Length: 277
Length: 277
Image 1 (cartoon, rainbow over the protein chains, first blue to last red):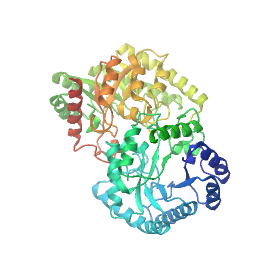
Image 2 (cartoon, rainbow over the protein chains, first blue to last red):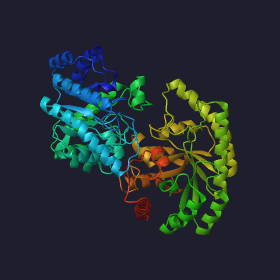
Image 3 (cartoon, each protein chain N blue to C red):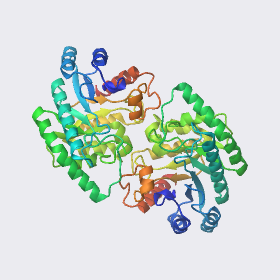
Image 4 (tube, rainbow over the protein chains, first blue to last red):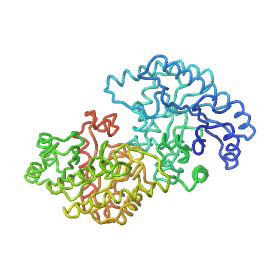
């Protein structure tokens, strides 16, 4: 369960209040975004989660000024440093994956012809390679997330991401997010199956960012496809609070997507648990 | 079939070349966007379409500077004048509906609390009312289009639009676009049924803006829902060319969505015709 359903940025005090609740509801894993290094303390978080028996996954957050493609050397290096830091945070909290658009800032889009796209992918592969080595050493995978067309123009589909990571080490995988799959994939189930063992993380929510089970997605078929590829990691519910200016605008959340944020979490959990048992 | 699949803005010479082709392929109706009044000549278009036995629908286009809500009186009046012009164009070419986001410019989003939203809807109702009267006199309906959350924050769902038009005359209806329904509606089929006789126009494409039949939408169920409400108007395929800077950026088209633009049109037509016979 992503803490973004309630908070942005995440603070130690938020996590101290939220993690026990998330654990009581019956979640196995909590997802912790690293917006600005230092927002929350990874060592304290690890102690808290261990006491609760709660696992962790970590989100990388590329806002303005964090870029690995079509930018200057200094921005690229700072972004690599940031990603290495997020990997270290993941290692500290016991997460085995960091997920997110590990390529360009969310909302940055531009047109590319075929040659420009090839050049951008080569530039990205060069920039992510040292970060991938750092991830391998830390026992953490980078789950590269294709985003819908309004949030990026680089990786909109799973096949675009799969092509880009083909020659990179296995410490680079893909993140499947049902919200983006619904918009961009002609066949979301085929996309899941094609990603196979490169799936490093999965985020779930309804087509409108509500609770899994609430929208029109075919959840039994999605879970079957994930079973077919042997995916054994968490299904992390990711949605956002409409009550916080920064996250509501970043995620374009203009209306409540459930009776309450808590209900979105607990309804989603109940629905998925029911399907999985 | 929307001319945006190939051109933006539409010119008389484009239409002269395209309309016979669209007619030969077997389309009944061609959709003509009015980006800037004067881009194409409505009287000449009517002659051309009549010769081909081709019907017309018309798109209103609210780009920057065209606003009916949260703007100054002069902008509001110019936008009303523009919409009256589009209604006159529709009347000239023999179209009975003008479709599009007849409220704010595409891409303009902002957060509103419940009171601010009520105020915005009241402001919009006041601003559209004289345009609705003009439409009624011209025998044309304004089909208000809910857009996905990245393109607007005012009307994302059909129920938001239905609530807003409830007290307006029947010359104001809603436009159902399968692309936006897929993103925003928890139950797209229920949304279609709830719109009932207020449906004034329907635009169709795959969930990724490709040809109907190519993506993961349930087309037989969509057509059943439209049949249930007695919708008798056209199903207009709307997609956009990735080859034109303005329209590709406006619609966030970063990759080809079919083998060719012509194939998108003809595959979509063949698929729908097959389902409808």
